[in-house]
Amino acid sequence: MARTRDDGITLIELSVTMALFGVLATIGVYSFRTFQHSLEEQGAQREVVSQLRDAQTRAVAESTTYCVDFGVTPATTYSIYRVPGADQGPLAAGFSCTSGTRLSTYTNQNGTSVSSADFEQRNGVHTTFVLFTARGSASAGSVNLARGDSSKTYSVSVDGLTGRVSSSGS
Image: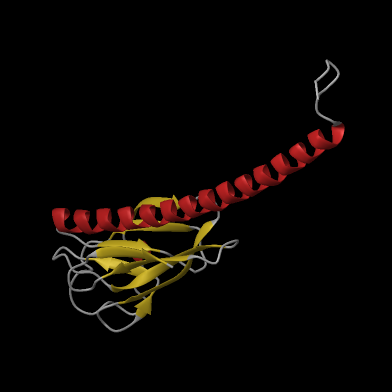
């Protein structure tokens, strides 16, 4: 059958094509947003790891104690303090990082917050702050990060003997 100049696509064919394109675009946008949220959570985790490692390095280099205080959980901010003289013996009752000099305060971005923080101090007390001493040791424990709109939790752990900071996600 020979084609004429009036041949072309129908409105129905165009509508079906546009509907399929819309469905595929929606799936792509949703997948991209999920991927973007995952990257934001990982970024917050990497930031906490970086700040903890920096505090440990500074404590050893400056021969003094550094404290990273996650405060009341859940929290979106945490602070770093320089606390000279807190590296030996049992901690005084009611010890707080605020007895030192606050160096900086960080805010987790994009809705990521500290869902829990638990560090065991040398006198057996569990707190929401980690101490890094001049000898390189630290308060053993971990801090968990999460977003309110996600089921993923990222954990940052601190080894007490070596002060090593590591991270994992679930």
